[in-house]
Length: 320
Ligand code: HEM
Ligand SMILES: *[C@@H]1O[C@H](CO)[C@@H](O)[C@H](O)[C@H]1NC(C)=O
Image (cartoon, rainbow, N blue to C red):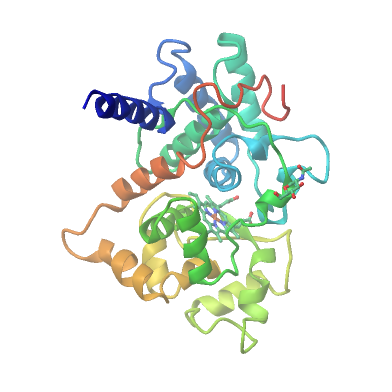
């Protein structure tokens, strides 16, 4: 009896310990201005460069999906083996903005705020800049000690089947609904023609272009991206509404106006289609903005280091 009580105490102790120790307001006493500093820097950057919000939102996703949300993508040792050089991270940016926030925070509260948290906060502030929902960001992540390009091989790819996209999200503890709702981050931003080649000119298995592309959209896409694989030319991902965070992206997916093949595929799978994409368009359906915010919070928990794990870097591009 006594023994089993002690065992129970020990298990609950360790269960509690192994759980994520992220919390909203983690820096409230150690660096009270942390969130305000990041928000101001994101707003400033966005005022001078319209690409800021999309790039920062995407950065958080790419950080979290490789080794967890621990800032590994920020490391720049100038080596080909840096994770940052991965094929799947093509076009990812915003590093300079994160580094600017970091140096201001180091001046205010040295050794306190992790780069991984700055990335998570900046993604939220990016959503707000684009007129999307404000949500509370859990903080308390610590920075990782590994940067390895091989570990990014598993990034979701624009040409992945919906089965494969689901499998990659499941592996991170996310579900089908998260896949759709987080893909709707494509409500802002642009894509390089580089990512359109297969969809427009050599769609498998039949060749030619993806038959699911609306006939109104197809000539538009082809005239912007006349050749396979141009990295220099970019097109809006959310046709007609690429600067504003809104539900238009899901409407576009429903009507064949998705630009990215991975987004379009969400409407071809029974589960992602009926359970999620359509559910936001029925009267009294769920709130897309609230669901997006809660999916972002869950994405922000992937593989985090907390407590005494990891480190707090002094600059985000280098291990201490
Ligand atoms: C489901 C798997 C996903 C795939 C296959 C995918 C693929 C892509 C591709 C190919 C681009 C164009 C990149 C470029 O040309 O620079 C892109 C852009 C973007 N992605 Fe995703 N993405 C996925 C999920 C996500 C998630 C979960 C988020 C955030 C929560 C996200 C946020 C963004 C944003 C904001 C952009 C625009 C970036 C810019 O304008 O520079 N994506 N994505
Ligand atoms: C990178 O990760 C791969 C796969 O886990 C591993 O085989 C390789 O040894 C790692 N490379 C370095 C430099 O740590």
